[in-house]
Image (spheres, rainbow, N blue to C red):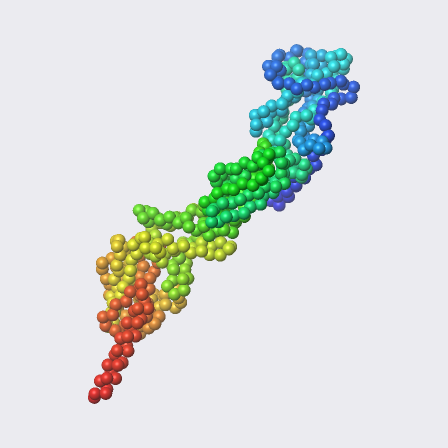
Length: 486
């Protein structure tokens, strides 16, 4: 773990990075040490690109130092701009006529160069004197990565200084406040859910600049969703309409000025619209694999559950919980209509039952009661193996074993002996598949053990109860009729 001292140091560094003051200038230019006359002119850098062997009298240390910083140039009536402030020092020598300073953008591959010349007579008189040179007319962009070089004129081999430099970005308070590229504008939107269109209006940005708008899915970065739109600076109407396919929690509106390294403004207004995330459930019948992959990053707990008959409650299946997954996969899954997938976030829980629409074959369990024997058999369109046991239902979804466990295959049946002490409203026959890793247990309860020849099915227990009480009523009436004729 990172120590407290390291964390404090990092906070201080980031604070200083964001908050250090950038000097402001009204005009750029060149300055040299007092008493030294110098002037500059733009240079292509080509003519001074080839170096020559230095005279024996010239020290390789003639260039002493180079320091780079950023300044903000602000002129009334014009937008502010960022400039490199380059300070260098050298020892004057009769073999040196001046300096060439160049900046090369590693982002745009563009270069800027200037030639600094010293008065020839003065430089001979001040041979060996240390001279300070400052130049601040190279304009740069926000967050640009710059490579700066300083060479002698003529260009002597091995006599050179170079340095990489990163220009401050919009997190710096001065840059964010004064540089137009950091003024990302203001976005307002309206959603037409029927036509699946988001209308975006842009305000508070540079009117003479084009502006880009796009929809994107925000993961680690914001990934494109369709084409981006352009609002022309000359257009009076500053709005666009963008089509979407689904309103997902990671769907964002992003806008930025059409200039290099412009600050991007993101608006993600659908973060609570998580309902659409739970539809992406896929079942592979060949591998018996049930899978779900989020279309957006989401903090969710996923598990399988058994949908109950009585109150639409979905009882969790043990050992099926997966926390904050990038992808969920359950192998060897029972395709029963009551096997469902539950998604839980801080907003609530959602249950999706991918087999509820009858697209996959479902198995059924039936029983037939005769005296103190209950015969259990299963029907299924596919080969399957099951386990059966008698259990005592203590709660709605909890049934404790009250006998031996029996194994049975499709097409076969098993007889279970049930004593009269075990008969009652809480006694159930429970069956489940054993040839899969995830199965839902089904129960047939409230069986009248003493009634001969009655069949019960798990698909309609209420009907089974009707048969039971009809039989009891018939037997009572028959006994009463016999008593009248005795």
